[in-house]
Length: 313
Image 1 (spheres, one colour):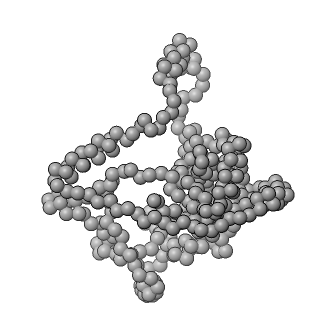
Image 2: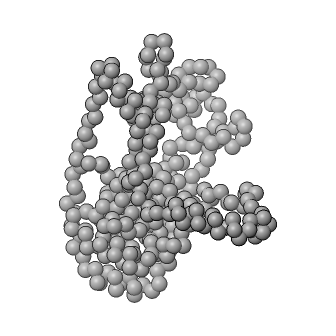
Image 3: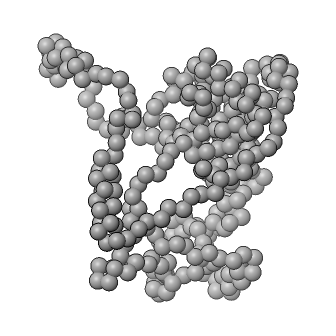
């Protein structure tokens, strides 16, 4: 059974529903390792200094933004933490919109919201209300370290949390030279239109996603199994431990909370909280003593981890 990404709450108005955020997709890609063709030994990737060629340990690596060719601004861990959102375990619905008004290009990645024990009532209430009204909830959610815009919508018995792209992440079609104007400008006559419609009608059917498969991956997987069998090799898949379920209860007076939410007048999107201090960018200065002091301080605070060998795929 998959582990939850986080366990927190789904809130709208004054109602809070304890939920777990679960991945809504499955990675079925085949991953490969790079080997030396001469002796079939794995290739190891190292972090090296571009000037000296020496390997650089993780404790001496900092994050920087290249604002000009060869010029960098260094960000310390405190800078990044101060810019990070405060809430990591909550989906706060800011507003509800008609589902049909969201451009499909905004949808990016699905997650599933799973109710905690004894939290089914609030979960079902929101799910069925969204279904009957044709609305979706627009909220923000922090997945790992980044904040995303998201939409909460019903799908069967589930509430799906769909990560949305921000407008600046979409390419404006007007950036490209696309054909516009009437059909006559492209010498398309009524007979051609009728034939195209007839062809589309003859090829029309129902959307059955189970009938579609990644045939390339299946053929490649079959080939790999044959190779493994021919070599007498075996593969082993370790099962992930089943996570313990949250025993938290959620016995609340839903009518009272709903009434209080309605009495608070028309709810507007909540203003985003601003961090206590803004992230300040620090320009790196080549001071040997300062770098040595920082390195010693960081090494004393935490142990470092080496990165695993990267996989080609």
